[in-house]
Image (tube, rainbow, N blue to C red; front, side):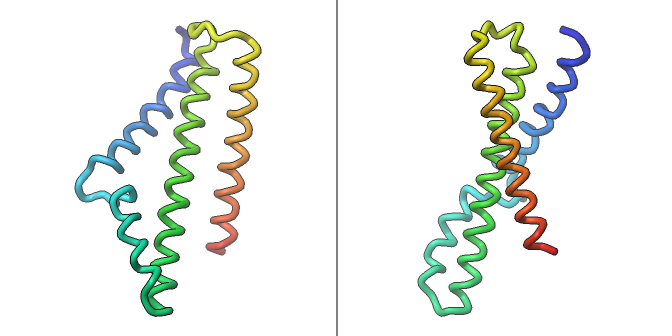
Length: 118
């Protein structure tokens, strides 16, 4: 297997651990259960409307970010273990392009969040 494949395994394990903590841990912020609670707040007064809208946008951005990270991990693992998966070269090339495209989406998302915070 080699040491280079272990480099890709550690970030994948830590990512899956973090996702499991977010989903199954009781004291952690549960985006998947709190996001629907934000929707009725959109129909209240103006001040409460802005707070509910902001909460919904933030939770949506978290969801998009974690979905993109999950896609990056899966495609990265497929690329790292391409010798063992038996995927044809043309499909492997498309996976590599999709992996790169998702990387640019994550960079764009992080840069837009950074510009918003500064």
